[in-house]
Length: 405
Image (cartoon, rainbow, N blue to C red; front, side, top):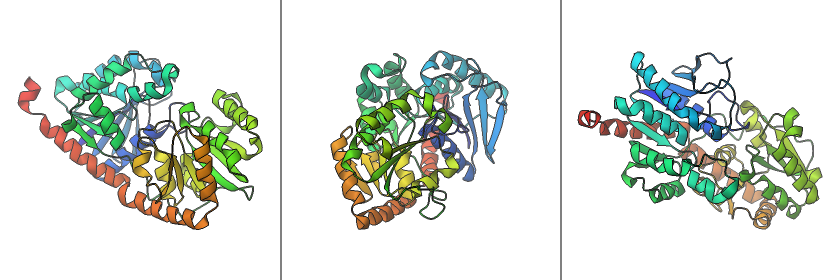
């Protein structure tokens, strides 16, 4: 099949960990590569955010990344991109009308990509598959007035879900959220994200550990909802352990990052500043070594549609302590591959970390079970194969009569 991936703000070429660059970037890159390995022809369309980008970049055999001229050719926060989605969609439609390469199916990633995809694909009878990666209703529920999403997001997301031919939920919790938005259950397919099980493995290089302290590693963008401050507040309950947070801006830019400064202030107020390290952005190629350096990996966001970090840790054979939210409740099996704790509860988190760091056998058992679970259930090949079925169903649903109508 010819598959168009629309990822308006999250380029598969961007380094994860920076502003607005996280799990969606990795998801689109890895999924596109896995689909190409199955013989499909994939083009990823993402917004041009610098004039230096060539129009098209070949990411690998079978995957091209196309930079769409929608809005100014400079980096913008994703929440500022809504006004440019009509231009994004019109550009796609004109491109597909003029180019012999017309997609058999369009897969939109994030709600704004869905708007652009429906604008371009609808008049041409091309089926659209939607993955949200995060829902505005959930974000508003947890962030309240701190939510910077465009006000129209809450109303537009259900319309996208009811118009798309198929909607991909990444976890069981998201299925329930979509049904509450009146997205027809028959159109929803549960397909979890994946992990590169050939790269994230228990054996391999290990990142340097300058001290003999037990290491708690947490990974992600430096945004409040990731719960890093809860992890720091839990550290006084875990004597002798260090907390390393990987992600955010490059190390030399941490000193000017507001969230980094806030986290260091929290560490100082808790009396653990000497046991907290902000590592900054880590190259994707180095992440397996960082996971292997940890005694335990903590993933404690306020909410999480899926969450790649626990899967990557599990694939590397590391035990996980995770917040019982969203997709983390699917991937982490409580008492088998890790421990689930209530979100935003430093006391429960600290108790779980202290117990696990004090039990070598449990950590080994969790690590082995996590590695096997990631390998058997969450490879990108398996995700791609499941999505092949979704694409086929979406394509079959588009009949000549439906297009004419």
